[in-house]
Image (cartoon, rainbow, N blue to C red; front, side):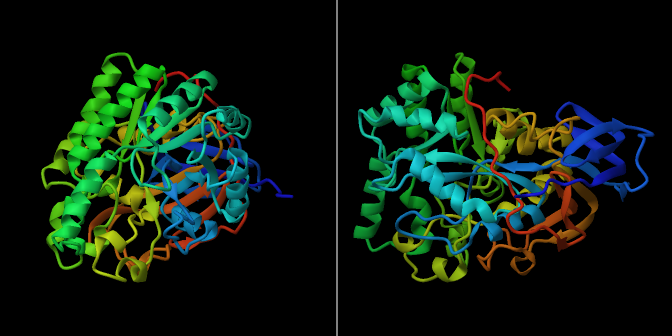
Length: 464
């Protein structure tokens, strides 16, 4: 049986950052929870002192869209939950929300139980969305099991035949069932017919090299599917979350639905804010094979504007740890696994290109990476908060050091990063997970199997 932490920590002289503001204070951790925040806090003689002078003290990052140890039925990443969550910890991520995939023949309960067994090696805490891929009419009652198991969100796809794709009738049926029991669907939106037609045209023309990947999945395919999914969600009376928006128009459609009274949230990712389709014309286009693909060079600035305006609820990574060997096996986008590693670089990239460049305030950063994911996904206030009684998931971030992202310095297995050579401002000084220091001053100090599954609460929840 896991022994809970009994350590007492006092984080002194740091600048605490919350969605509501920033302030100078000490933070007292007792065992696994935050005990108190203030000045001159009474402490025991055996309290461990941590000097955070000159640093920001942030709630631990929640990456609410990751694919650790991913098995698509076609491709498999070679990482495991220890490797994936170690990389997360080294980047200031203290909770991930990953996926339990329902493989053919499985019940939803069996899918969750199998994934929980795999996740036992995790270093940090984790929650699960559930990919529903095989739930024909008459079996909707299984969705109630997800509420009981603390996994009250279902992932649906408008593309990826034959393993993930759901047609409109299926999406509507599952949304209606989800609305009845408080499940929140999250949807990957790309029009499958448009993607298929464009891909087939490129194949027929012999244009299958990596540099053609972006053309195979046009922005219109995403935008049409977003609009359609929002319409179906409205018809079903169901809240919905739109994942990895790669275009400003996708986010604008979410805003429009929200303005019309719908409960709709969305996310984007660092790759869509920092990279663009010009990368496909460069010397190593294999680095950027993902779905949706990178977009036109003017899209990142338009997305940033919407992030700044508060239209985007959270920033996630869609992390997939495919290796360099897997990505470069053939110069053929139809045979290259899609997905990029990003867990460890999320916080430093968003601090650098959000806060340090003046696009975001520190409070906005904390909202996007911690508080909003916790609220949307039923983890608040246990996670994502610097509040007495919340889990002591804390990041100490030093804004002064300057560096460059290098794959050789990262802890995932990929052997590459799409952000190679990008400048970063600041670094994670320490990561604390439920009161335990699991990363400090460049050294990972966590251990296998210390992470816990976090059961989440179903809807309804107050809107963020």
